[in-house]
Amino acid sequence: MNIILLGPPGAGKGTQAQRLVDRYGFKQLSTGDMLRAAVKAGTPVGLQAKAVMEAGQLVSDDIVSALIGDELDALAPGQGAIFDGYPRTAPQAEALDVILTARGRKLDHVIELDVDEDALVERITGRFTCAQCGKGYNDHFELPKVPGTCDKCGSHEFKRRPDDNEATVRTRMAEYRAKTAPILPIYNARGIVSHIDGMAAMDDVTAAIEAVIK
Image 1 (tube, rainbow, N blue to C red):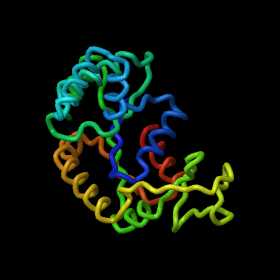
Image 2: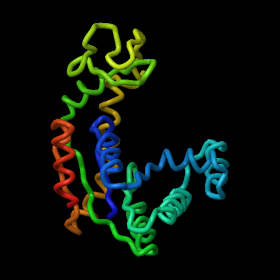
Image 3: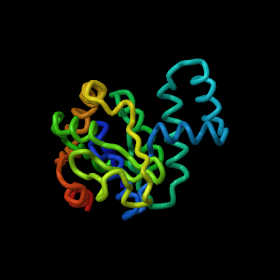
């Protein structure tokens, strides 16, 4: 099974993708992670990407397509894939069709986590993590049981991402809408798009996704 998981930053897409990986053995294909791994490994495609990035240019769709093809070729027989952050444009959606067809695969589901923008801003601007172990917290929903002390490791140091501010979050939301707008009609026409309430409890979101893919 091959799935595209859509959702703006902070919608919980990464958490849900990891749960699908853990429970069903999917391979999560994140273009950013794939690029970094290919560059580090020095693969032919990775060397191409490195040269482009060092020149200060954007990695082309052809390079990204080659990366995805390599990752799909490395999957175990019958192993499914979750596409995270790709495709973002109509040409990329067309390229993905070609890549999958060439490997006897097809796209089964496009799942979008729908969010309320104001609530998402509150969720993201309130989050912080333990600087020692990385456990996540939130000013509004999950504070340490003992103020100033990490529940998991006892550290007293916490950190916040500098881009977790309202202006940045709203810009990301606008960018997400602009990028997904061209591809959703393509998949809507095929009847493979499902919308799930991304503001629900994490376990409820997981259950809704599992109901779609079963």
